Structure formats: structure tokens, C-alpha cells
Amino acid sequence: MEPVPVIDKWTGLEACRLQACLRMTNEGFANHLGVAVRTIAAWHDRPEITPRLEIQQALDSVLARLKPPELERFAQLSGPESPAAGKGRAEPARDLPPAPEQALAGRHALQPDVAERLRTDPHIAAAFGRLDTMAGWPQGEARRRVATALLSLDSSVLQDQQHHWGMVRRSTIADALWAYYGEPQPPYVRYRAACDGYPVLTSVLTRSEWLDLALPLNQGLDRFSVGPTEDHDRAVLDDTGTRAAVRRLAQVLASHTRLVNAPLFRLRSLTAQDGALDGRFGLCDFASYALTLDLLENELLDAVSDARALSPAALPLRAHQLPDLSAAVHLHDRLCVGGTLALCAIARPASRARRGTSDYVLLVQERSGKVLNGNRRLSVIPKAFHQPLADYSEDVHLGATLERELEEELFGREDVDSTFGDQKCADPMHPSRLSPAMKWLIDHDDPSIWRMECTGFGVNLLTGNYEFPGLIVIDDPTWWEQFGGVIEANWESSGLRRYSSLDRSALGELIRDPAWSNEGLFALLQGLRRLDQLGEQRVDLPSIELEIL
Image 1: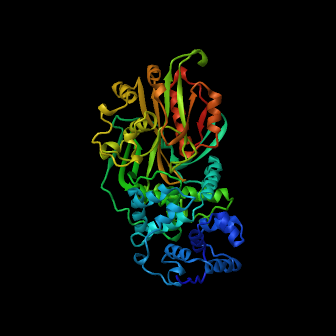
Image 2: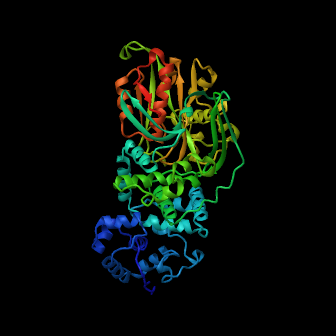
Image 3: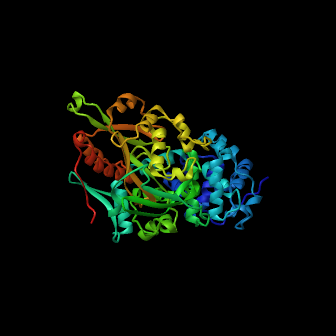
């Protein structure tokens, strides 16, 4: 018979392992112990918690009553840091049995394909390898810990958590971040505006020379280059960081979220001068970002939704990764990835419903719950990470990213979607492969017919990401007549909205919608300001006055 282990001091982590070996839901385990369900949820969220003495005694009693198969599962789930692995003495992880994928497949709260993905997905395996390196763990430890977390993950708790995150207003996020960091020192400013008198504050840190760029793309004015890849493996995660990373990977698997460890462009330096942008980029992998800076958003949402006072102690991940505004703007000294997102404005012919005047269709997306960033928030479309596809030196230019994203997010080209796996085509944007809608644009490469512009630059303090807002304007209404019916958002959106550039009232309501992401609203406002200069009779837009002090 398997000997009953002795737990000198129970923690939330060990209690969750006990729950996992019993294959109980949060509600079932709470009833079994005689505690509140929120106590079990707190153990999942903060595994370092030490339960009260009477609860430790109840856990001892449950442990003593385990049946042999349950004892075996508990031994499998106990890690080298756990007293159950040797009564307080850590054993080498290589001597532990493999992660219990079979138990995962049989647990009713998880679908069988979760266990299969845990076992076979090469991108998840790459994330495990990156986590092992950053945490200083032996190979395979991250996989085992994520398997343990999955066994005890309650899908209903995860859904409730995501719902609470989605209820946090964009303005609340911005206010919380500026309260945490304080007023920036010149030349840096908060991006804020008055929209028909309505005040808007975002979490974007910027400079006056980074705004009103109106920089035409694909004309050699974004003078970006890619340097040699520098060592970014030196990032070290502390205990708080490793727990958050394990929890994030377990949530990715449980929620069937796509995670592809594709390369990302890493910004090292940027200057705006003489009507051009000069930027230097390196490369990193997505896992390095997903397991570090990408964790800051959820940490902040947890604190805000729980009405906790914000401080370095309350936000330990942020205190370690992005402690102050100086760290945010010193791009060379930290991992800084990001993207570009653009307001898309497409001319339509005149109609009686639109006052007999041609207008622009303005497209806005509701982000899907399956995306890692800005999920369930409003954003402009297209929106993308800045990353290479096939030719790194060409793909570093913003216009290449936006054209690719038009194909992927609006014109139905799945083969340019990096989340589907490796790119095997030598030239995925070759004219022979373009969708009819994109080929029409390429064949009519004339600024009087259509244009792409970069409208600004900023650093989003929520994640530390760089943001290049843009504007895509199609001025020839025959394009809409021919291709308007084929525009359809891809899996990254849960819904697509369209607005008329003549509907000032509706656009004012849109700006005030609390569901915006901060970077999405930044791009919307910058795009509308520029469209107001270009659109002439086709626009009747809200007044947008920047309040850059």
C-alpha cells in the first residue's frame, strides 16, 4: 500500500493537489472540507497561502482517508518543492513520474483534446521550455506543474474571472495606471483628449512629436531595420512570476486559446524626425513575452476588480517587470514588443439614407475571448502584433504588417495567419496569391485612390507594448461596391460593427463606450483626427482636441 505522506504545513498549492487527486470541483471540495467555495478559489489564485490551523487539520483528515489510487495520484502531483515529495526535502525533478495526461483526459471538467494538446502541441512545448529556462527549473518541470494546475482548474471559476475582467472599464484601467506611475516628466505626456467636450484619458505614454505623424507607409519613410538577435534568455522569474506563468499556460490550455511561439519584432530604439520614423528592431519569441510582460494586464485587472489599493506589493509582477515610467521608455534595456492597428475607412457611393452624400464605412471589431490580448474589448481592425512572416527585412515595415492583416482579418486569407503554424510559402504576399480585394488595391497603388498612414506612436503602460496607430483610407467608392460584401472578420473577432463617417452622434457614443481597449481607442482617435483632415464632404466627425500639456 502507498504510504500516507506527511504534510508539515499545508499551502494553497498542496491543498489544490489534494483536490486534484480527488477529482473534485471547487464546490465539491469546499463541501468535503466544510469551507467556503471562495476559500478554494483563493488557493488556486494564490497557491502560497497558508490555511488556518483548523483547515490544516481538516486537510490532514482528508489526506489520511485517501484510497490507494488517490494516494498514487497525490504522489504524482506533488512537486519537488512540496513536503509530500519527501517530507520537506526536495528531490530532483527527473526522478518524478511524468505529468498525468491520462488523468487529465478523464477529468469531466476538461475536454480530452486539452490533454492531447498538453502532450503534443510543439508551441506549448516551446513555452514550457522557455519557462523552465527563466525559472531555473530542470527540463520538464514546467510541463508537470502546468499539468497539476490543469487538474485543479475549475472552468467555472475561470469563466467568472474572465467575466470580472471584462467588466473593468477602460477608463478605470487608465486611471489606475496613472495613479500607480504618477505624472510623466517632459517630454513624455499622457495621451488624453476632449471629444465634443467629453474627457478621454488612455494608458498610452507618448510625446508631442510622436503624434500627428500622417506618415505615408510603403514609401520608405518608416526606415526600420532588423539587427542581430540579442540574448533575451537572461530574464529570470521569481516565485511570483513562475506561479503566474504556470497559471497562464493552464488557462490557455483550458480555454482553448491559441498560442503560437512565432517570432516578434522587439523595438530597441525609435526617433521621429524630418517627416520619417527611424527604428531599430531585434527579435524575440512570443513565449518570452507571454510569460512575462503579458501577465501584467491580468494582474492589474485582478487588483482593480477586487478594489485593492495599488502598490508594488499589490502588483509584484509589475513591480518586477515595469516598475516605473523610466523602465517603460528605456526600450533598449527591456523586452518591448508591440504592434500596429489601424482605423479602416472605406468610401461608399451616395445614397438617400446617407443624405445623398458619399461617406466612409468605419470598421470596429469586438475582440474574441480566444485571443491573448485585449480579449472581449473593442478595437479598430486590423490589429496585429508586429512580427515577421517570411522576409524579416521587408516585414519589419508597418505597411507590410497592415497589408498582411487586411488579408488575414478582413479578406479571408488563413494562410497568412501566424497562429495556424509555420509559414512554408516563400512569398505569401506574392500578387498571384492575393485575394481579389487586396489585388485590386495593389493594382491601384495611387494615394488619390487609397492610402495607408501611420498616425502616431506610444507605449501602452498596461503591458509595456509599443503601439503604432494607423489609418487605411480607400477613397474610390467602386471598391466598396465590388468587395464590400466579402469583408468578414476572422476568428480574432466575436463581432464586426460598421459606422458611417457622417453619423457624428453615433461616433460620439462609440468613443464613450467603456469597452474599448486603451490602444484601440488611441488608434480610433488618431485615425478620426487624420480622417477629418482628409475626408472633406464625406465626414461629420466629433471634435477631438488633444490635451497634451
